[in-house]
Picture 1 (tube, rainbow, N blue to C red):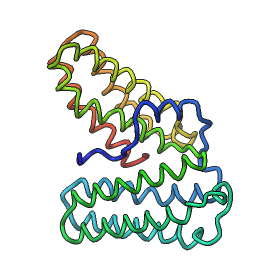
Picture 2 (tube, rainbow, N blue to C red; picture 1 turned 180 degrees about the vertical axis):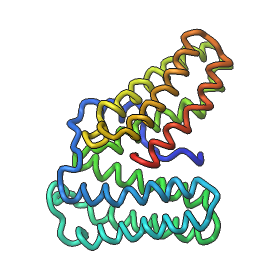
Picture 3 (spheres, rainbow, N blue to C red; picture 1 turned 90 degrees about the horizontal axis):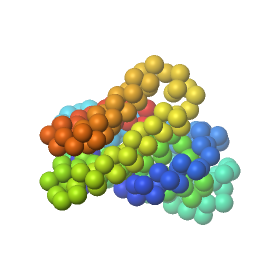
Length: 241
């Protein structure tokens, strides 16, 4: 699996669902706690994509501690809107299992394996929210990343194929739309955060550089722009995703 391929969500389809969904931003006690536990998880995902075993292990410990708090609070008594979800408890157990497995892999020095294992938790949490019709900012981040993954992995190869420029232009258009939604769908506390605005602007600028090169039919510039798309998103994700 790709080391920076975080979610395994369908790309444009997810984006369209999110585009027409009412953004439920931490509107209940369970979602609040899940999002609080998501912050150390993002750190663990980021650290296992690096090279420092001690840093990754510390992030895993924080992630598991935060998740233990979720389980202790909601495993037996589930408030709305998740109280009708028969798979809620199963999801909590599954995420705990994923974290434990990733922690063991980090201890063994297998950071890449741990990173890939942790991606399964994101899928499980995204599915949990989807089943209960909850949309948070992380879902918009996931939708952008899913489309970005296709551009970063396949973009340069597409440019070397017949009609590849046109195909990549279409993908870049979808990516640009999703990048704009990272700003428009951000909650008020993020829209007023200067660091968030700077990082989100960098994401949008990276996509604009690609579309500009594609419109100019400059293959060399387009390939250079593709190589610069991942980093701005990674910085935004690590802090606010």
